[in-house]
Structure formats: structure tokens, C-alpha cells
Length: 198
Image (cartoon, rainbow, N blue to C red; front, side):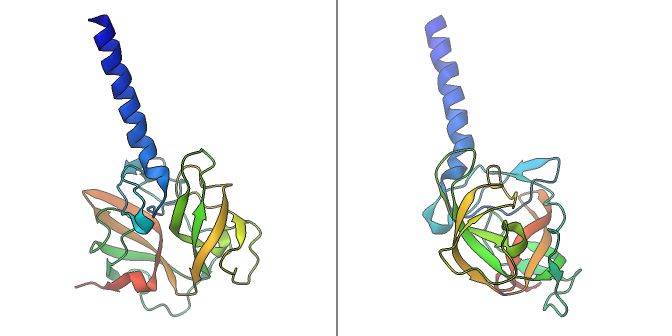
């Protein structure tokens, strides 16, 4: 009886560990900073064929990084109600959102291996120029190896990464609600991932 109980407990612990680490196998994360105190388990879509079903994301992404320039005439000004078309996290595509920041910068999808271990993350959307160590002001070419300063997920800050591709579209921070959870200061969605609220 004791042996069966210990086996059941061990299996439960192992299963829990697999659930917690399953989201670090690559693909697209929700892009929250880790400044907020509370977090929510929000499944992410499989962008690039990877599963992030259990990634922990803070519900508050925190402020925009220092040095980022506010957009002078964004298509969606701060306060605009919009509909998201991005699928960075479960429930994001089609969610109603409010623009809380609009910025002009270069925005990158990156491939990296978390500093906490685990499998590589592919095409993480998005990291802005100001979240890359010593990035300077010029657009970084695809394939450039960089060090991340963003904290969108555990193990991201300090990770070595490679630029997969980039855009100079206006990039936005948004507040939105999905699956009963309110996400604030979500980083990031680019202009092509937003449409006017219906």
C-alpha cells in the first residue's frame, strides 16, 4: 500500500513538472514583462509548431522600456478600443482590447534558449529594440546574435538569442481580457495584428 501511494505521488509530481515545463519547448509566448506581482497561467498558441500551453505570464506587463519613443501619429492612439488578431496566447485572437501605448521602434521575433533550461523557443513575438542589450539605434539584420533584456517569460532576461525577422510597424501595448483574466500592459502587438473594434 505504501509503495503504491509513493508511486502515485511520484507520478503526480512528475506529471506536474511536465505540465510546467511543457510551455518552454518553443513557439510564441504571451509577451508580458515580469514586473507585475501576480501571474496567470495562460495557454499560448503553437506558433512555429511549438506548444506553450502552460506558460506562466504576469497579468501586468509593467511599463514600457526606457528609451522607447512614443508614436507621433499612430493608427490606433492610446485609449482606442480595438480587436486583436494576434494569437500569441490562447483567447487572444478576436479579444477586445484597449491601446495603452503606441511606439515607433524596431520590433523583432527571436529564437532563444531560456536561461532556466529547457528546449529552445522559436519565433517569440515580440521583442523591441530597447529590450535587446547594446542594440544601438539601427535595425538589426536577421540572423544577428543578441542578448535579451526583456522579461516576458521566465528565463528570457540574459538569454542569448538570434533575430528571426523584424518589422518597423508601430508596436502597441494593450489591455485585454481573455478566458476571464484581465491582462494589462501586454507587450507587444504590431499594427498588422490589430483591427478596429467591431
